[in-house]
Amino acid sequence: MKSVFDKYTKKYDKWYEKNKFAFLSELKAIRKVLPRKANMESLEIGVGTGRFASTLGITKGIDPSYSMLKVAQKRGVDAYFGTGENIPFKDKTFDCAIIVITLCFVKNPKKVLKETARILKKNGRIVIGIVDKKSFLGKFYQKKKSVFYKKARFYSVKKVTQLLKKTGFSKFSFYQTLFIFPDKMKSQEQPKRGYGKGGFVVIAATKK
Image (cartoon, rainbow, N blue to C red; front, side):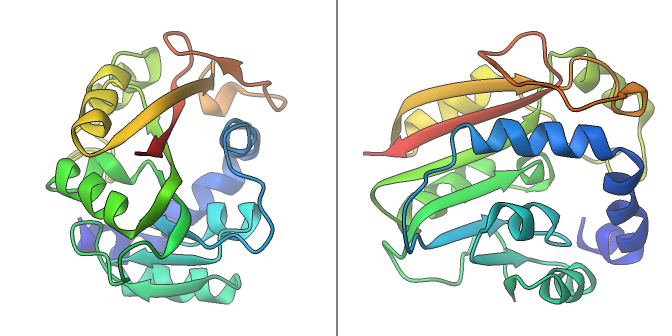
């Protein structure tokens, strides 16, 4: 997927401008579970162009796309080349790690989550944002086969939760948003607890 994101960096980044209310709604859902801690060390895995990290105050990011890393760095993110399967940081470095959309593009999601557990401190928080495979939005993207999603592997909330349990996480919480298609949104949505109706679901868990 690296070549796709390198080639279409501007197209990817402009999606968030064209679908401003969807982006703001996703941010609001993530903030519901993002730790509020002074001097918190945090990492975004699959930082992309840094839109989430720069807005949420995430201190560092990694991505396998050099083109996207350049944009993230311009947005003030301390961003490095790297993949979720081999995170270039030492054990127990971070208080929090976020993975937004990225999970559907990686080759080995279980390894990514295992690596995330490794670099998190004890009781560290993982925050994952996905387009739920079973939602109306997930079904639409699977049929649409866009330049980004044609090779993506979508996951259900249940599947991601199972993977998190297998890689050392517990104490789950869920928030959902995007109850209509992003291009139809006229205002920012309020996130709701749980999942099953929203196209975008945030899953948070704690490292054991």
